Length: 229
Image (cartoon, rainbow, N blue to C red; front, side, top):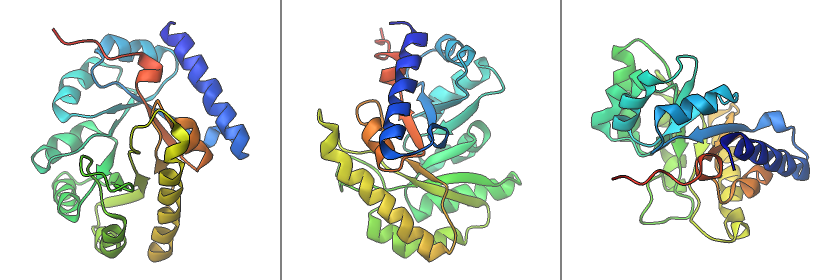
């Protein structure tokens, strides 16, 4: 199937998931994860109307973004090392993967130096997987007031990566717990959080049914990543 066919199929599946949940399809946005794909592929996707792209690594994004249309929005969706924060702030419109107070503090310092405010999502390791990054939910609730006190960070919501499984229904509780955690965070902050970034190619429909406002899709849109030589 072509990229246009993949996008149409993806949009139809997103719309169907929204219908099942009684949601407006406009309430869920697509972050096209272009990791491993060349600028030409990004340009082709942009020509089809996709405007938000996600990258996992700062170094790859640094090489790729200047070769893509300037109107696009870029989100950092992979783990961010503190020594890459300064570059990340020049490249990305939003960071989905703030997973510690230390990282948040470094982002705040860099944002102060560049006189900007940074929209961020707080990454939560809901399933407690040892191989994944992200806040423990209890630690997040404890540190949330300190995170919120960082003046250059705009906390827009939460993000998680569910465990891989061939049966998306098995990770429904993970997405549900993230939504419930968002509600607890909103109580602490006394203000609403806009986003739940959850759901990838294998499980995005369940994530939408549980309240995702952003789905991060790579393979279902672009196909398998090109093999490196």
